[in-house]
Every structure is written in C-alpha cells, then in structure tokens.
Amino acid sequence: MPDAIPPLYLATAIEAVIRAGEVQLARFGTDVRIDKKGAIDLVTEIDLAIEREFRAMIAERFPDHVVLGEEFSSTGDREARPPFCWVFDPVDGTTNYAHGLPIFCSSLALEIDGEIAVGAIYDPTRRELFTAERGQGARLNGQPLRVSLPSGGQDTLLDSLLVTGFHYGIHRDPEDLVSLFREFITKSRAVRRLGSAALDLCYVAAGRFDGYWESKIQPWDVAAGALIVSEAGGKVTTVNGESFHSRAGSVLATNGAIHGLMLDTILGFAERQRAPNRTQ
Ligand code: LIP
Image (tube, rainbow, N blue to C red; front, side):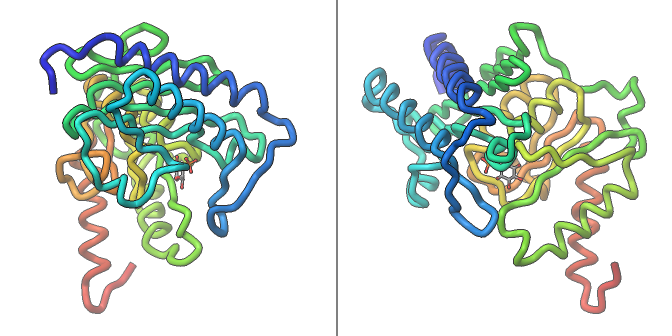
C-alpha cells in the first residue's frame, strides 16, 4: 500500500458510482428485465449493464488492474489478491431495486496489495455520496462522517439501534439466523433489515445505526462500506471478532462502544448452539 494514495483512484471511484446511480435512477420503476440467479437471488439487466460499462472503463484507463464484480466474476477471482483490485457491486439492494423499493446504491472499493485503499458508495435516490480514503477519514457529500458517540447512550445494547441482513440461502437453513436475530431484538432498542449491506455500513458510519452484523456476505457488498466505517471512527471485525478483510465472509461493524457487547452476544449464542443438549 503506497503511503500517499494517488487522488485519481478516489476520483475514479466517485465517477463510477455516480454514473451507476444515473443508470439505476433512469430505469428505476420501469419495466426492467429481471432474472433469477437462485430461488430468491435476483439480477436485473441494470446490474449487468452497469458492471459491463465499469469493466470497460477500467480496462481502458488501468489495463493492469483487475475487477472483482458481483455479476461477471468467478469463484476463483474471489480468492485472488492482485496488486490492484476494484471490488464492485453495480446495484447493492437488487431485490429492493427490482421491487421498486428505493433503498439501493452502488458500492466500489479499490484494494491495493489486498488492503482496501479507497471506497465510494452512492445512493441516487437520496443523492448521498459516501467516500473514504485510508488514513484520510470518511465523508458524506464532502462533509466529515462520525459514528454515533457513547455520550448519546449508545454504549449499551438497550439504547442501540442495530441492523442486519440475511443471505440468499436462508430458506435452506433459517434457524441460526432467526434465533440470533431474536437475541438482538430482545436486547436492543430495535433491529432493522434494509436489504443493502453497503447502506447498512454507511449508516453505521453516519451514526444512524450503532451496529451491523451479517454472515455469508460477499466481498463487493462490504469492501467499501467497511473502510468508510473504520475511517469514521468505528470498529470493523468478522462476526467472530477476527480482523476484517473483504473476503472474510462475515462482518460486525459498530460505533466501537458496543462492539464487545455485540461480540459477546454472537459468541455466547454460538457456544449455546454448540452445546450438546442446547436450549434456546
Ligand atoms: C444484498 C446485501 C444484503 C444481503 C442480501 C444481498 P445484493 O446484496 O446487500 O445485505 O442481506 O442477501 O447479499 O444481492 O443486493 O447485491
């Protein structure tokens, strides 16, 4: 990771997510072609068109850079760690987009030598651009971002507003996910489920949520958002408290003050699930 990250990289990320937002908004609520990648896993022609356009832009401007994108990357690509890797979700919140629910965005991170260097997330319906550069802080529409502060009482779970998400395999095995959701509902002020990991993370960075957790999550859903939370003064690990990286498969992101409390709840729950004659 270079000491000074060339400003061109963040500028390129911002240009790409704003362009993605224009395409999303132009076709939002219209008769968009929708296909199924799985029983409840959708892809629209807009997801595909935006990623194709972005790949062409990177190939032209940075021929030696790699794109890891939700729609056209293979499983093998996910494991690779090229020197320059753009981690892109053309539409995060595709199910919402397909149903006409205005909670979606595009999310883009650049990883240099496997470390997230810049992140940009754009929600075109609210015209909210979240950005971060490693070591340079996080911003919303250019203004500095800060996670929620304990002074507001957000150092206890009972006074905290949390958010989570469920992966597309939930129909096969809902028990653990729903039971952990139940744990947090009975311990916190409230738990939301918005349907966009990238926006969930941005809202933790903005202090709108105090904590977010999700398992079986993809690199393109969380890479940019994780940097934005940590640069806004928050804490990001895996759901087991290990150091976070975009291929880790899970994320726990908080204002820092409630990180230990959320981790205790998750690890305590997992231990009880492992207990031979377990009770709820
Ligand atoms: C979605 C994530 C969300 C998760 C969904 C899905 P997509 O990404 O943002 O947090 O719960 O299962 O992975 O498919 O809209 O890009």
